[in-house]
Image 1 (cartoon, rainbow, N blue to C red):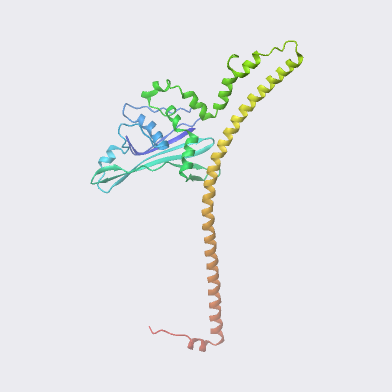
Image 2: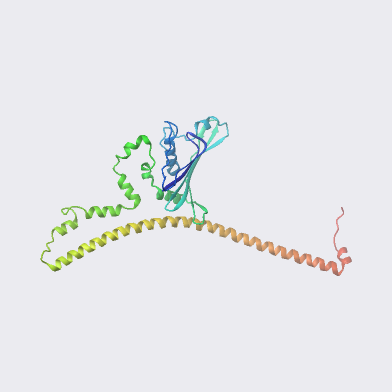
Length: 308
């Protein structure tokens, strides 16, 4: 995941519209944000969590900037919004979430926040929205599962606690699809007294037995091959997950194309009706001209005239 930019609108300390562009340079790829206490550094971290998962860890859950809230009058509405632009697995994504606040006789209050919105850039450069709520959640989980977000977006005050958590390595292995391979390696590397393979090998005495030696070499060769197959299976599963994700996006495009196809058919039907009416009009004008040219006096006498 490569973060490109973060857009904020009326989010906590950030009144109005604010945007931060992160460095994407391969050589200088670190962006440092410096500020005094309570200036909004932690708020930036929380903005990511809110946009992606709809969660915040502030003492108060109100997100609207206080200065904006104080200036609101009756029947006025303000919007809090966060938008993240990032690149993941060679695809550019835009993820956003918003919440409206209204002012009435009860004061300023927030309406229920909207769901996350996700769109991505296709290979032709067109931006395509992910419409299904299930697909939106699946896309966000594919980019960064919520259970791992604390290891990527964490407050500076809590950095000491992060290193003490025991599930960090297991979570990362799960994200990278390495759990199966890790379990296989643990099993193969166990001591001879514990693993099945260790017990089997320790019970074999192949000295002076040519067939037994050949069998043992074959076992070792097959064991190495099995390890390679295990690695290949991990790669295949990652590819399957990737293409399942692309499948969801393709299905969204196909559904949109079905709607476009229906509109195209209606447009073609209207075009045919217009052409039919134009043809009928030309034929009527032609008959009128022929009647007038053949017998202009009779043609005029047969017309009904309205008095002005």
